[in-house]
Amino acid sequence: MATINDNYLKLKAGYLFPEIARRVNTFVEGNPEAKIIKLGIGDVTEPLPEACRTAMIKAVEDMGDRSTFKGYGPEQGYGWLREKIAAQDFQARGCDIDASEIFVSDGAKCDTGNILDIFGKNNKIAVTDPVYPVYVDTNVMAGHTGETNDKGEYDGLVYLPISAENNFIADIPTEKVDLIYLCFPNNPTGATATKAYLKAWVDYAKANDSIIFFDAAYEAFITDDSLPHSIYEIEGAKDCALEFRSFSKNAGFTGTRCAFTVVPKQLTAKASDGSEVELWKLWNRRQSTKFNGVSYIVQRGAEAVYSEAGKAQIKALVDFYLENAKIICDKLKSAGFEVYGGVNAPYIWLKTPHDLSSWDFFDKLLQTTNVVGTPGSGFGAAGEGYFRISAFNSRNNVEEAMKRITEQFKV
Ligand code: MLT
Image (cartoon, helix red, strand yellow):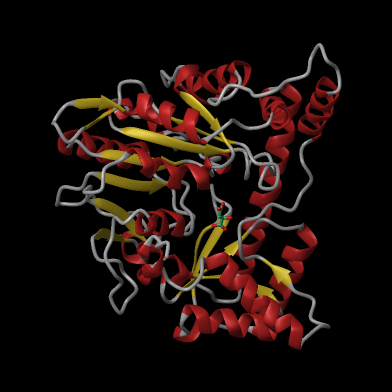
């Protein structure tokens, strides 16, 4: 009989968001009249920017004409998109990133998991707690951990706790780790990182020969000019960091799928014989073998993000969700909730009222207000007692959800 990857048996029963969907579906089966408002998974609700749609329609027409038809594209993405990303997302901010260092993909979630293909089995890996669960689960799948303890922590991972006590900013570890996942603006807490804080991580990584996996999927939500959008705004980061970006949350591409990963050419890690190998070469090899690129049509849509019209439309979209976040923060605070994030970030992180556990608050909120959020404990043991509300929804739904919650809960 064929055998399986036993590491999958170490995973907790289900991935967080399908588990939430399962509980909501069960509730709806018993309560078909309930008007559910979903502020759980960070999935966008507003239509794609007009500039992106127009570009994709034109690209469909290109595919209908032999002279402009496209078959397989470059696995790394089309040059015209990579050039715009490099120029506008990085060089315009003073980051010396070349188009050849950009790898266009179908998602930052996929890339943060897939990147483990090019790393060895014996790295010491650090994650914050709470954390975006994909970082942990993909390491479990790859066999980089042992089993969980009774708190749900995997043996072999280094957990860096974040909570209100440290403003949701992890202390730089005193021990040496090889790979570190950082996400700013943070999912799930909505915390942001200053340049000084990222510099401390870059200094740590360079001193310890570590690699930082910097997830900047929410950088478009930064409105404070003093905050860095990219880790490459920090001197020396090209020697020690990869960066993941996405069009999902700024341009509404969660269903359209386009993202990119930056792998600087000078970034290296050690082979088992002690030699230093360029990660760019390995990722390029991995992508050209396992990936055939994002569709031409979608890449044309992503390219339109960088047009003048696209930039204005994306700013309007991001501003819309940020206004939702402000409404959520204001209303919850006025009802006495302890609220974090929601500024420079689309996620609001709150302390559950009356010391309810995260899942108990989830169930109570669902049953009494028909509003869905995300239990903080789903992001890690230190998320227990917290809860995440996403600002990705229509204005009507956000206002209605806040009305229901503030009527129901007085903290
Ligand atoms: C979330 O809700 O945390 C995000 O939607 C996850 C994702 O982008 O994959």
